[in-house]
Each structure stands twice: as C-alpha cells, then as structure tokens.
Image (tube, rainbow, N blue to C red; front, side):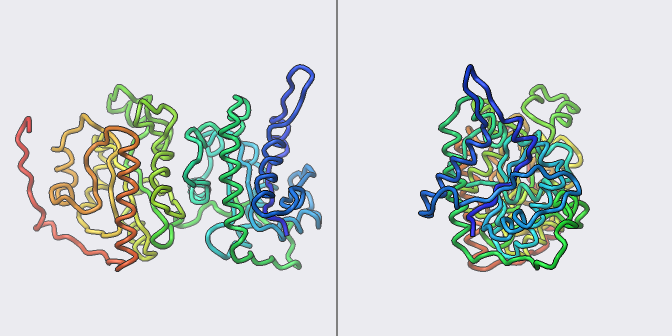
Length: 407
C-alpha cells in the first residue's frame, strides 16, 4: 500500500523545468521528492515506497494499464497537482473520479495542490467543480499567506524555499493523518475503468452544491461584490475586488490576502475540518436549511458595500425574516456605509443584536480572523449541545430603529 498517489499533468511537468547556466532541474520533481521525504520521515518507510504516480503520458481514450489501476487502488490518499492543463485533462479528471468512487468514507481522501495560481486553475469551470475543490483543499493552520493565490510553482520560481517546505510539511502531515484512518474500499476489479468519466464532467449539473456535515464543517456565504459590481456603483477602490467575491482583498496592509484566505485562517484556528463555499445564491434559505439538517454551522461574510446592490439586499432581507441558531455573520469591510442601511436591510437581526452576528467593521486582518474563529466556535458548541431548529420571525414583531442623522 502506498500512502499517496501523485496525480499531475505531463504538460505541467514539462512547463516546470528550469535551466540556469549549466544546471537544469524540474520544480515539480523537486516537490514530489520533498513530499516523499517528508512522508517517509513520518511513517518510517523508505521514501521510494510511500507514493505512486503515472509516468506514462496518457492521452484521451488511452487504456489504463494494470500498474496505474493498482496504484490508484492501493493508495490511501490522492494528491492532485492542479494547473489549467490539469483541469482540461480527461485522464487527470478520471483519477479524481476513481478516488471519488472509492471515497465512501469521510473526511475526503483527495487533496488538491494549486501548482499554478488558483484563479488561473479555476477560471471557466462549472460552479459545482469549483465548490468541490473548495471543499477539499488544504486549509490547515500554517498554510503560506499567498497560497493558493500565487500557486506553489511560483514559490519555487521565486526561491521562496521556506514556503515550499512549509506547504510540503503540512501536506505530509495531512497525508499521514488521513492514511492512518480506516482504509478506503477497493473498486470492483471487473469494472471497465477506461470508461470512467472525468470528475470535471461528472460533477457538472448536480442539483445542489455540497453542504458540510456536522458541527466541525462550515458553510460560507459571501455577501461580497465583484470588481464589476463595484465599478457599477462608482466605488473608487474597485481594484480591491476581483472576478469572484472570494477574490476581494479587504485589508490594504496585506495586499495578497483574499477574503477566502483569511476566512480560512479563522476556520483553521477554530479547528473546523471542512469548508464549503456556497457564494450567495438566491435560494439562500434553502441552503441554510440543508445545513441545519446536517447540523452544520453557516457563516455569512458581509461587505457593507454590497448592501448598495439590490440583489444583496433582497437575499439578506429574506434571511432577516427567520431566526437560525446555526448561522452567524461577520462583517469584513464597508466602513463608509452607515448603520441606517444595515437597519433598513436587517431590521430584526441588526437591531436586536443577534447572537453570533458581528456587525462592526474590523480594524485589521487579525481582528477579522479572531471574529471568524469566535463566531464559528460559538455556533459549533451550540450545535454540539442542542442542534436547535429553525424558527420563523413574524414581520409584525420586528423592532423599529430610530437613527437620528449624525448619530
């Protein structure tokens, strides 16, 4: 049995070569070798025995040989090295699908590593695929600050060896942690694995986004706009925003830290196991209800600037009408948006001072991270004790806030 299967795209491997003066090497090979050494140190086995990988350049429609199938069957964990080429590769997608079908146990035994920056890897993918990758990505405390927004290959190219070693170390510990749990089942050897679909195809068109299970899973909703949204309302600092809400960088003193990265810091500190990014869908209440049935915390990340957009107002108003004890809210920005707008949109929750809702704008990154940690811990403790059900709040009972100008 191998501790992990190393899944990568051969074109990515070729693009990772380097040549300096009379020396040449390959960053992806260096990453693989270092990861094998780290796992070897943890498990006490020779480094050449801890991993499997496909060294044949398979093309679309190629037949999987017995050596490749055996490696996938006998490995505890799949490490997927993500790149734009990887996401377009049918063979790589089939390796993920193979592990998805083996993976009847929790937590997932697939760990994606962003070799190229995450925006490039995820651009143009179906939301279901993006959600799946977000759910299983590495989120332990200590992940380098600019990962995955830079990608591991960039760390190697810039000579940031400490970041490379740190990520290898965290990944090795995660492999060891997962590999010492109950083994994954073996797929039926009589199945025709050459007809296995790519996970990037099989994940498309699913009726619902993944929902985290249990008190140690977290479902995140981002009430945050994009660069296009901010330009539409004439916001001067639209460059802080990106193509997706998760790309927003709310703290100028940390220009590389997206809201997704620093939110995960707070979740890591709270020792949450899984993370599901659910955006901010129109069926927000349905998703919240699904999380309640799974006894799983929900966290809404609020940028007050988003309250200038009608679609955000409408969704949050619908949420304001119900009281969910497994839902919290943390504000991350929007300092020049007054409390009057909050009072208009969230009449009930803002005025009452709803438990696990932090409306104040944080002064810095560390304050935001501490707020995320505190809110999620509080919800988790409540769910572990009671799993309190949802109750609906009558509109007639909503309090009225009388805010005087200038107050």
